Image (tube, rainbow, N blue to C red; front, side, top):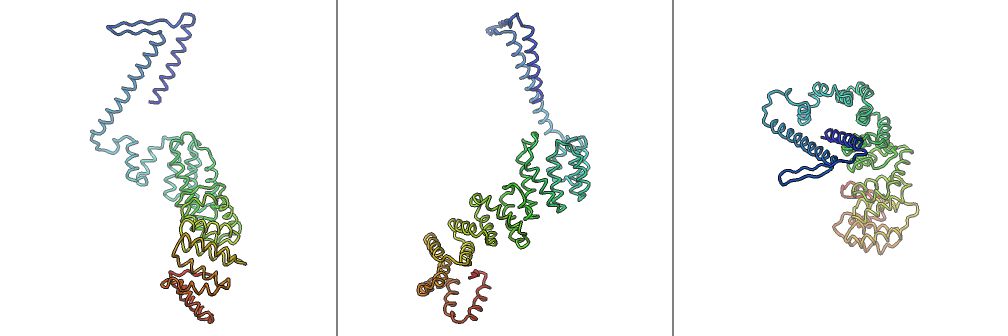
Length: 397
């Protein structure tokens, strides 16, 4: 239909131009039609325009009518042979049955005449069959207009071959490359494919992903999985890796505070392993505790405060009191306050806290520890017992 409209537009411009030349110095003429009670008066140019509009409407009516009757007739036909189907219908069936691998010869034959996709389709099958070198050779021969599609497959091949650095280089370039106009209508699908490849790279080599010059390349699921991989492989990080991680957090600090709670907790655990990020760790922990009281988050913050060279006990106590006002009846806050009182030599106030929460394991631990205060060996054995309990948090203080 678009082709038909373009033809009519071109023909209309041509006719009007010819009419303007022939009418020069003579006027536009006059047309009067009278039939029964209907009459039409116009210039000759208006009559020509009317004929063109009527012709276009007839053509469009014929086109849509033909398509409708062909589609309805197609529904009633009895198909006895797969080859009787239109090639697009055959491809649709292969797609619906997810049978591309079994129908390789058929699909390659359909696309053999496509100068745009022929080599990429061949490369896709070579890739699925594990022949990566042949696939890359086919991609090198692909049409320039299909550059983005070829690059997506090339990056996937690099990742399968664990050539993560090459994949990173190509992904970085493709992310900054202006999308071809013919792909704009399916840009969402294209971006989803890009995001999936970034996610694959981030999980394959989490520390290499930090070398990207852009941010926000992962979806929420892959972002959390990537952070988990960083925690798992933290001991393998180099000095440069840790520096890049710090830069990434500082660049995204305000954005990270808007992310889901679970994602922020993962960042908190990473920051806890980098002493130089102590200020950011404390800010994020307190931010999380304002949203929701999580014993693990409080533990990470409290431990960091007490492991400082010179702990600021008044500041720690003030924060604990603020949390107690927000979250009532939380034994862990009382547990932490006991340590602050003992560190600041307020033993009588600490003793009063021991009477609280008689059934809580943390407070029971403190009551026993207080009784065994003069026997370090028994306290060490007590710690071993409690640290083996899955519900007990090992406070390194």
